[in-house]
Structures are given as structure tokens and as C-alpha cells.
Amino acid sequence: MTKKGVLLVNLGTPDSPSVKDVRKYLDEFLMDGRVIDIPKFNRALLVKGIITTFRGPKSAKLYEAIWTEQGSPLMIYSLEQAQLLQQSLGDEYHVELAMRYQSPSIKQGLENLKAKQVDRITVIPLFPQYASATTGSVIEKVMDEVKRWQTIPPISFINSFHDNDKMIQVFAENAISQNYKQFDHYLFSYHGVPERQLLKADDTGKHCLQRPDCCDQLTAINKFCYKAQCYDTSKKIAAYLDIKTENYTVCFQSRLGKAEWAKPYSSEVLKDLAAKGIKKVLVFSPAFVADCLETIHEIGVEYDHDFKALGGEKVQLVESLNSHPLFIEALADLTR
Ligand SMILES: C=CC1=C(C)c2cc3[nH]c(cc4nc(cc5[nH]c(cc1n2)c(C)c5CCC(=O)O)C(CCC(=O)O)=C4C)c(C)c3C=C
Ligand SMILES: [Fe+2]
Ligand SMILES: [Fe+2]
Image 1 (tube, rainbow, N blue to C red):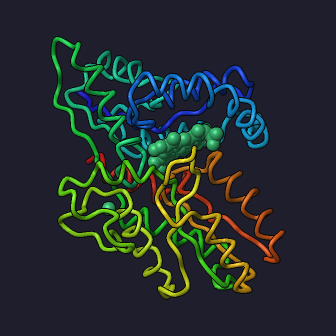
Image 2 (image 1 turned 180 degrees about the vertical axis):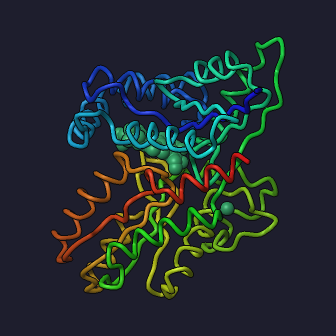
């Protein structure tokens, strides 16, 4: 029986939390021209001269704090997702997991699918909202690999799944399990991107960042805009849980460097909420399909610590999609 191939691709994580491995990871990740989109010479100066030197040891400490006996949480959940998807799809399919950076590589994943003689390949970048730095980069890398093949099979790419009903339901159900009604305010905190990248993605040149609320509605003009897709995901989760507009804020975290990134910044929103006397904040992080450094540590540890220092009581993270059976169904639906 011929099989259909599926390549699940997440971002990647260091091989270990050692400074050496974290530097190697940061170097490959941040030298990607879709992640730090400045001329290559300047990017090399910035990444090799400053970021990996100074950020390497700092990031290594953070990774050390979240590392488990089985390894990095992002890797553990990604392997589980691939294994469960394989079970769900059955023998008709062959599922491979790859990481955009470090291992297992996209090249190896594609070679494995080729060795299985699959008659078509579906690539699912594991990022619900499209960004050039993530989904765009995965698509580019896959095309770059297969361009060397003599026979290129039919390949399809999932470009985004920001509005996938099952994905929305898992975030909402996880919040219900965490007794979400006890919280005073809700954040939808997405990984940020530089504003420069939002502007570059606006083909009209007349829409994004022209007004503060430019992308809070998803329309024909901004349908591929990362920020617009983030607002759309948030609205759908809030609607499922009946959270009123005034009780939630969409915001952006994990800024790197001095440039302007997508706003408002999550850390600033938390300061404002503390100043208003808000005590308990529940944080959804729907840019990620699995808990990782940016959810477990940045939200669950750092934001919680900083918010308490400002007089708040707690910041709590809603568990990510991880290996939830409904998310595996969502991946199976996307494949089919
Ligand atoms: C939603 C997906 C992501 C986008 C968009 C994104 C953009 C982006 N990220 C950086 C810099 C860093 N990101 C780091 C970690 C990290 N980023 C994502 C996802 C997106 N990044 C994930 C899933 C992770 C966690 C990986 C893990 O191992 O758990 C890091 C490293 C950690 C740290 O030092 O904070 C950096 C650096 C840039 C510049 C960028 C630009 C568009
Ligand atoms: Fe990132
Ligand atoms: Fe936009």
C-alpha cells in the first residue's frame, strides 16, 4: 500500500541546556533572514558578536530551569504529538517530526518520507498564526530541500490554523479545567514579532500600523497578517468562554532587541493591570502548540513574579495544546 507523508515541523530547541548547545541553537535560529530580517553582514555582527555571546549564557540558565529528565518540554510534546498523530491516522500515512532549527532536521524528515516512497507530502508548520519568521521560514526550508530532488512529489503546506475550531476548543477547555471564572482579567499573550515584519507583510502598504486598531478585525486585506490572526484566535477563545471584550487584552511577549515590536507588550499590560488593582490574571498563549520556554518560564515564572512584586496575587498560564486528544484530531483534520 502506498502511503501519504506528513511532516510536522516545530521551531526547535537546544540539544541540551549547556551554554555551548544554546549558543549553537541561537546561532542557527537567529541567522535565519526571516527571523532577524536585516542585511546578512549586519545580522552576523549582531548575532555572532552580541546575541549569542551575551544572550547564550542567560538563555542557558532559563533552559536549565525548565529542562526535564526526558529533555526540553518543546521536544517532548512535539514527539508525543507526532506519535499520537501517527496512531490517529493509521497505516495509510507516515508521520515524521522535524524542527526548523537543530534536530531532527527538515532534510532528514523529508529523506525519511522519500525512503517510505510516499505518494504525497503534507507539511504542517506547528504555528497556528502565519508569520514569515515561523511558517514562512519552514515553507522556504522545505522548498529549498526538495528543489534538489529529481522527482518532487505533490506537496501541500498548511499556511495557518488560527481559527481551527478544535484548537480553539482545547485552549478553552484547558481554561475551564483551571477554573477560569475565578480570574479578574484574561491575557492572550502571543510571541511578538518586530513591527517592521508586520509592515513588510502588508502588501497594500496602507493598512498595518496606520491606526492603533488596524488589525483587530480579520478582513480580506489583512488575512495573512500575524497580528490580525492573533486577534482572531483570541476572539474565538473568548467567545467560547463568554469572556467579555473589556475583560481581556491581546498582547505580545518575548521581545528581543531595541526595535519596536508588536504592541501592546505583555509586561506593560501586566503593569497597567496591577496599577488598576487587578489581582488574578489568567494567561492564554495561543501562538504555541506546546508548552516551552516562552510559556513555562516567561509567563508562568517571570510574569507571575513581576506581577506579585507590583501588588498582584497571581499570573497563571493556561496549559498549551500539548498532547490533548482533540488537538491530535485537529492535526488529523488538517492532514486530510
Ligand atoms: C509563535 C511563534 C514564534 C515567533 C513568531 C517567533 C519569533 C521570534 N523569536 C525570536 C527570538 C527568540 N525566540 C526564542 C524562543 C522561542 N520562540 C518560539 C516561537 C516563535 N518565535 C518558540 C516556540 C521558542 C521556544 C523554544 C524552546 O526551546 O522552548 C528564543 C530563545 C529563547 C530565549 O532566549 O528567549 C529567542 C532568542 C525572534 C528574534 C523572533 C522574530 C520574529
Ligand atoms: Fe521566538
Ligand atoms: Fe496587520
